[in-house]
Length: 349
Image: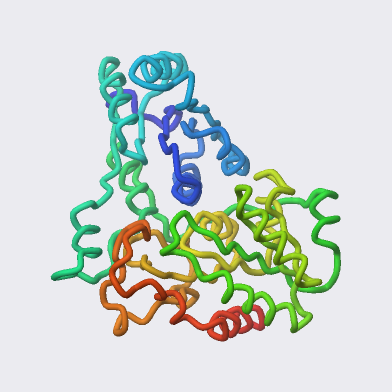
């Protein structure tokens, strides 16, 4: 590691999912605050590029894992492309088969390559049904920071300055409307049903918030099915605007950065909002903050959790994809009234 210095060039690998990619932001901010002359290149998927637009000294290199960089030959091609960037260190924040293959390629050039410790053993202990070890695990943000520390760039995440609010385009302002109401984002979807608040109950939350006439509610989602459902909700309530399918990610991020509050599942939108220091209320089903995916610098009081006395197997998995018998309606134990009360309290303070 004799090349180490503040002008070093670090390749950061994190290909998916959106929430995990978004969680790199506070860590990169802290890294650059301490080492302002560092150059960072993030290897990720093209749709996630706007997530990094607010960072100086950070460029995105797109991994086309479906075509150009697919398979062993494609990854060798990717390595050859990356080698031209004169990388000094590699921080692998993903640690999957693709990045492990890249590690072998980078070893040819003797480039220091540190991979994240995902904590699989302790996560298994936390999510198993018998002899569950129920305790807070290291956060994903800290696991990311540990990779840089192992490369020789230790990071303190305790006083991280977050991303600045973004200017709103005419298009976004026209969609949301300009008035004195507070802006509340609602992101009701997640990758797995075990992390999703039932839509019938979420509509009750939206209705109650809308009836106060204090809030403009912006709905977030993606994909044809989600867009269709959100469009249906928008039609029911005058103060509700669906953003899904109308904005690109850059425009969504500018809006998120200007929200007064975000209501989200344990999913990507929670992390996107947290990166701007927006208060985030999260609803948790089969997963739990102890696993380590809690939004950055958010109060744990803003997490609405299922009663573990009633449902002791929670968390049943890291990703919310394992449904224990009798846990089908676990989310329904969190009432719409609880959600509305929490939001109202935060927006009144």
